[in-house]
Structure formats: structure tokens, C-alpha cells
Image 1: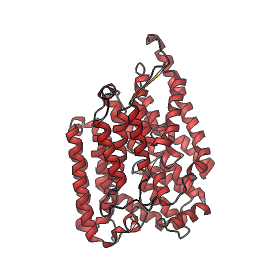
Image 2: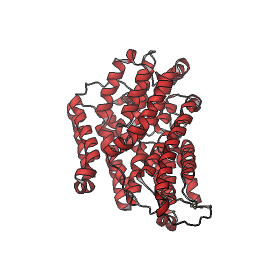
Image 3: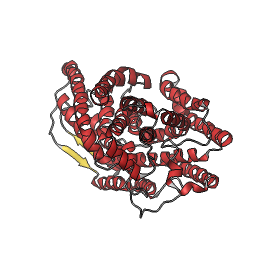
Image 4: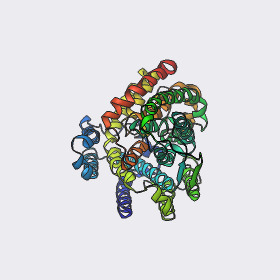
Length: 477
């Protein structure tokens, strides 16, 4: 399995060099940050994108949703080919019909940053063993989820998810149900990380563009706290009734109440990963840019941590965690397809948002950002609508001075976009990177997870949408 992972990374590296060199040759202005990022921030492409270009993305989403249900054998063995082939189709369309390598370059750059962060956190957290020897009562589970939601603002939703999902499963081993994992995804993999730029990638991209670091917590905490309380209250009720239904079947065990922790050196690796997030030319001018390559010093550090943390991990800890590379491999394959095929969808959204900026209200920003963040990567969705909101004041998202002026001028639009991008990432398995990884880890642990549609119909829509409607009525209507 290690060899497969290294082959995947080598393939990504070769592809990145090929695309970046061609993109650099096609556009000599690539070294300008605004030139590279203009597409994702809502800048219009030189050529109009035909709506038909979105078809591969729709096909991929439908196959992710239906494959595990209707043709599981085919999907299990061939999903990497499906994702890559659909990505190649979009790549060829852009190269042959639009002569647009810049969009592909940017998407590849985002993907490499995405997989570097998720991969390094996945491997580093996999070398940490945490065991909570307490009876998994509804109250204890609530405290556990609350703790995970809080620390997701410090080590990111991905770091918190990878660190805590296995202890959560083991703590509830005698009564684990799919809803336990669904609420874990709601709270720790998504909503919890809404308070800091470290918590979730879209907020970090906003920080890189000029949004002050503490702006998020100052302007979102009074939405975050009641949302967290309500979701935890719903979980408590559901878990309480599950506890009652299983009382007769459980054999009372003795618990020490202790928390066992092994793999302390991997905490150091997690710290390195979190600090490396800020090693970016957009944050510190002394950080060298590696243009025209679609990765930087940050990604090199993260991939290095991924390698060394695995090589130096305690094998007993890896065995106790039942660690393997399957979850990150699945994410790596599917999301390379998602990142490439969603390029035309994002560009069409960017153009539409800019053309209708005058008619966009805080409520529209909230629902549009949220709906698209559930099915598209929430980072470019955040940037597209932030650009559209700034366009209402004739401000440029690529200029930090303009971003600061926008933040000081009218915060309701940015608040709506920030909350929606993070909260609505919990609506589907693909709304945020950790969601899919948590699902994969749980399935490999023998937990039967709901399908793509069942997740939405049974859990996210009936539980989260009413809460999100209340947020809209109170704060953004």
C-alpha cells in the first residue's frame, strides 16, 4: 500500500510539473499572484465556458452517490479510473477548445495543497493512540464531541477528525450506530472549525487575502455557540433513546475513567503541519515562491512530515489504530476528479455572481454559498462569493487593502459567506475533505455507513436545514 501511495504522489508531481510548465509558457504573467488566482476569485475567463462542460462533474457526483448502492463491485474496483478519466475529459476540453491552461493550473494547485494537508494530518494523527476508558453515556459523548469541536479551531477540522474518530469509535464500541458518526462529521469535521482561519480552509484563504486573523471569532462566535448547542442537544436526545433501547442487551463493564495516550512525538508533527500552513508568500514576504510549480515550501514540508511521521511511527500504535492508507487513497483519487471536473462549474458560478452582484443580499450570499459548499469544494466557493460581495463596492479581492476596506465597511456579507461555507460543508460526504475520510475509516472498522443520498435524506436535511433556516431568519434575513 505504501508503494501505491508513493506512485500516486509521483503521478501528481509529474502531472503538476507538466501542467505548470505549459501554463507558464502560455502565460508569462503567471508569477503574478493575481493572475494565477483571478479565476477562482471570480475573475472572468478569456473564453466563455459552455454549460455542457459541467456534465463530467455531474456524472462524477451521481456515480459517487449511486455507485456504492447499485453497482458496488464495479465502483469499489474502478472508482479511481472513473475519477481520473472524467478529469482527463475536462482537461482535454479546456486545452483543445478553450486553450485555458491557467484554470487547470489553479485547480491542480488547490488539489495539491488540499491533499498535502489532509494526507499529512491523516498520517500524523494515525501515529497517535488515544483511549478513553469511560462508559459511553450520552453525556460523555456530548462532552467528547464538544471538546473535538473546540480543538478543531486549533488543529483544523481534518486534524481533529483524524485524531478523535478512532477513540470515539472504540469508546462506543458496544453501541455504535451510524448516527454517532454522522454527528461526529457535523460537529468536529465541519461546524466546529468556524472560529479561526486554521479551522477550515476557506477561512484560511480569506486570511491570506487580508481578512484579519481574529475577525472570524469576533464576528461568528455568537452564531457558532448556539448552533453547536442545538446540534449537541439533538444528538443527546437521539443518543439517550438509543441508550435506553440497548440497556437490556448490554453487560455492565468496569471502567477506570483513565485516558491512555501514546505517540507524543506525533504531536510535534501536528504542530509542524499547523505552523507550515502559514509558510506562504502571501503571509510572509520572506517565504520564497516556487512559481511556476503549483506547490510551495508549505506543501513540501507537509509531504515530508507525511513520510517521516509514518516511517518513525510506533508500529504498536499503528496496529492498535488499525492504520492503513485506504482512506487517504480513496480521497486522493476521488478528489482529483472532483477538483478538475468542478472547474467549469466554478467559473460559471463566478460569472453569474459578478453579473448579479447588485441583486445579491446577505440571505442570497448565505444560501448560495451554503448550497454550493455542500457539493463543490467550499474554498473556491467562498472566494467566488467573497469576490462578488466586494464587487458591490467596486473592490478587488486580489488587493489586501481592498479586502481590509471591505471588512471595515460591511461585515454582514462576509459573515454570511464564512458561516455558510463552513456549516454547509456538513451537508454531504464531499462537502469537506474530512467527511469522506471519516466515512472510509468507519467503513473499514465495520460500521455500515449510510449512502450518499441516505446521508442527506435521513440526516443532514432533516437535522441541519431547520437549524440553518433559523440562523438565516435571525442573522441574515
